[in-house]
Length: 129
Image 1 (cartoon, rainbow, N blue to C red):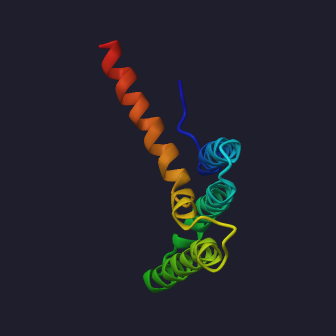
Image 2: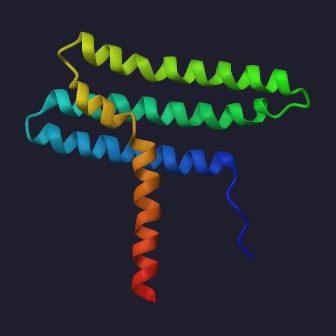
């Protein structure tokens, strides 16, 4: 019998895959001589993984008997994570060392990994039938 993965297991799985994708694609662009794109992808990927980890950790604090306290915690968590995601974007805007579009793409690395995984499951499932 297969059990559902825990939040921590999912964080490790998707976070590490997102970092591998960001670093791997960054190395590809580095090999092509695009240092700024490489830096942007890796910077965004790191912040994407950290944001995903914080989101999972904040889940346990959102569950509360008091609705007002839970709503306040959820809003605070959301604002803090948005502030965290703004850091690489501000860095990319202010510095020529980072490519802004690559940094923005890097911020979606965890989401890309999740979509790739589920898309591949759909394709493999369709091929098996």
